[in-house]
Amino acid sequence: SAIRYVAQTDRIAPARMIAVGDDVNDLPMIRGAGLGVAMPGAPETVRAEADRVAEGGLAKFLHDLLAGA
Image (cartoon, rainbow, N blue to C red; front, side, top):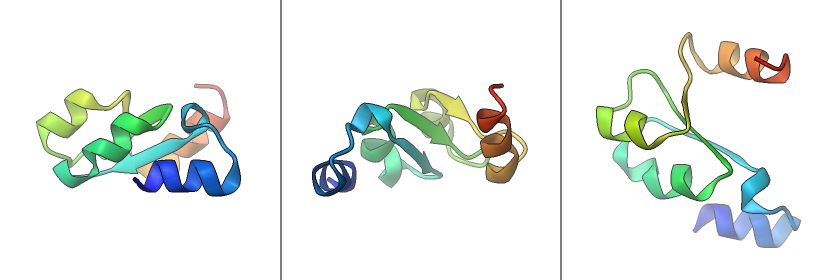
């Protein structure tokens, strides 16, 4: 519901959003975003459903993402 709320409030398509989570309660958010990211320490079920895993931490992941990696 958070993804939908932000999408409606800020007029951003969920497909253009990134959601980062580290536990099973984050799965709906990860599934609802255009790019769902799991933290490395997340349970396997979360990592399996995410589009990417932030290996090396979130800062490195974002740096690499912005660099086109």
